[in-house]
Length: 55
Image (cartoon, rainbow, N blue to C red; front, side, top):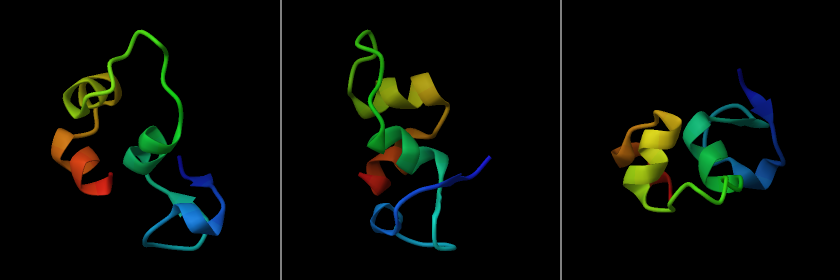
């Protein structure tokens, strides 16, 4: 499911759309989730390399 976001938050694709990796990096996480790329990848099922490339 795609989410509409302000234009300044997306880097490519149709205006107003943001992907799962970008949403994960932009939103806050539960306090119990460590903030390493590996932990974020495990939490979200987004590949670690994708998270690193988007950060």
